[in-house]
Length: 127
Image (cartoon, rainbow, N blue to C red; front, side):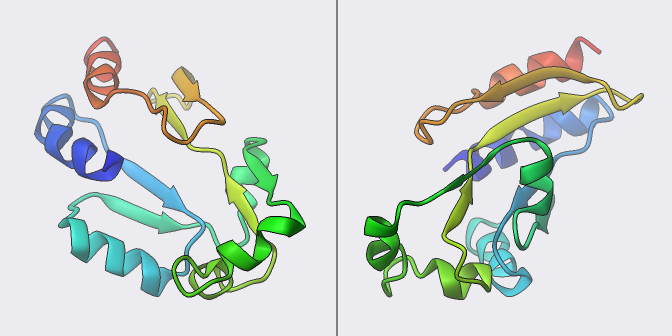
């Protein structure tokens, strides 16, 4: 839902000469499915192994008692991520200026809480 909402704001971001990029721990084939399913026109990059997310300190390890659920056919992290690490990134949104400085950051361990896409647009427009 978040990616779809960001897609809806893409014209405003483009008008402000901004680029939008999403990063996921999924394998490229699964990333392409997400792009197609939600008709996304911005870059969705694969961070297989959560290497980038680890650099941001955003990775947590699922406890062993959840491995069966997250390894089930419904979710199947080993298949979608290409490993059996059972590690997930904490969702984060970052607005970065042209000089590489993070001017707005939002991270919440509760994956249901996200930065409103309109706040991303506002932060970009204020650059």
